Image 1 (cartoon, rainbow, N blue to C red):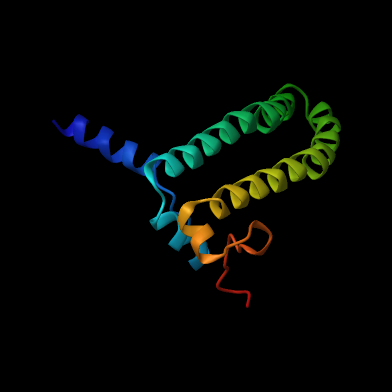
Image 2 (image 1 turned 45 degrees about the horizontal axis):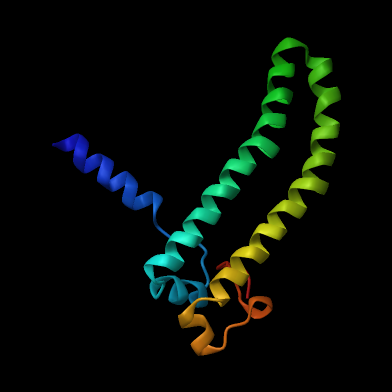
Length: 129
């Protein structure tokens, strides 16, 4: 019985659109998502997570394992990994954010209120105004 409750709690958490620094606009849009819109958003997030595993976690693990094998080799591989993260991963993150903005702005609720992808704030941080 408890394993079923635990599994249901994990499933509910995995299907959440909550984020700690989510902007009020995004929170409002997410609270009014239809079932189909929410599924599209969650599918896009799952796809991005799978891609991240291949494009970031795999190279990171190669660098981490190389440190165990040989420290100098680890430092040699660390430099191209950092360059890779700054160039490739940064572009991937920005492209994903643009896709999420476009998806959120294309929802029925957002269209009715005139939200546009380029003007939609995704995050609000308490230390910045």
